[in-house]
Image (cartoon, rainbow, N blue to C red; front, side, top):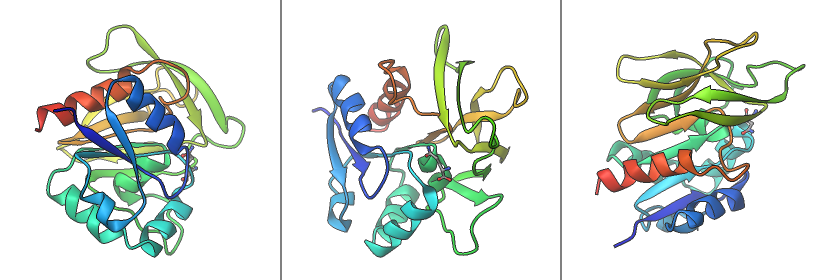
Length: 199
Ligand SMILES: NC(=O)CC[C@H](N)C(=O)O
């Protein structure tokens, strides 16, 4: 049986992730209502704006069901704002900003600064041969991780060299960058592998 992966569809670049998953032969569906949370094997949280996404997640009564499934081991991949949603801590959160949590890490929003709001760079990524061309759009970086978190990628050069931009903890995976942009599907494939392993 193929896996069904949901894409959280309250805000952000939902369509691109559905397309990336579909390219990999996965059944991809949007998740917008509480009952839809239970209908998927795994979830992708797209990029967008984490403060808005958090508000909508709470307004649509998705926070509790999502936290429950994360606690029960559902695989989740978060990109950019989705990474922020999976962080246990935000360094510079808005006063009322909450996350779903799950990954023992502290993220800093818009960390790369104004001059380089958006940039692209090639990264080494644990488990993948060659480099990954990574697109960053007002991206967070991971400022600190707990012992259970595996670092999958860091920026390799420039002012932000050494900054953590991809992590995994158990069934949760997060990247600061946007692999749904472009046609390299290896990052989504890595997530699908996690999903298949845990079935
Ligand atoms: N591309 C993105 O997802 C940007 C994230 C956004 N800066 C935030 O704080 O949520």
